[in-house]
Image (cartoon, rainbow, N blue to C red; front, side):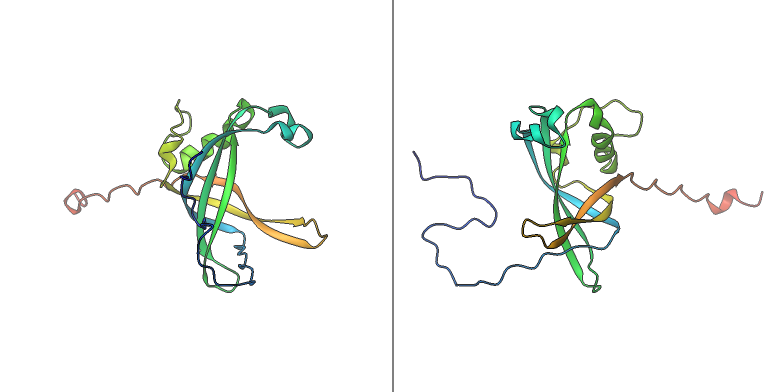
Length: 170
C-alpha cells in the first residue's frame, strides 16, 4: 500500500511538529437572518444503510449530494463571522423542491424550467439563504445551538434599465 494520500484541508502528518494547545476552537452561531453563501465542496454519496433507524430510513441507498456552504455574516457581537454548514440533498422526488431551491438560488435554473443538475458546477457558486438557529441536546445532556439553512432564496431580479432622458417629455 502506498503512503500517498489525497491532501485534506487541515490534515496533519504523523511526523509534523506540533505546538501543544488544549484550547478548543470556538464555535460560531450566526443569528437568524438572510446571509450570502459560497459553495465550497460537493461530494457524491448515498444515504447510509445505518439510516434505517432514522428519519431518512425510507431513502437508505438513495444517491445523495453532500454540499458544503461557507456562510458569512455578523455574529451576535456584531463581528464578522463565518459558518461552514453541510447540507444533504437526497436525490428522490420527495426532495425535488430542495434541489430546485438550491439550483435556482445560484442562478443555474429558473422556476418551471427543466434542468439536469450540474453538481460539480455548484462549486464556487454564490447565493443567499435564510439561516435559522437549531437548539439541541448534546450527548452529555447540555444544550447546544447550531445554524441550519431553512431556505435557499431566489436571486434578486435585475433592475430594469432606466428610460433614456430623451424618451421622457414628448
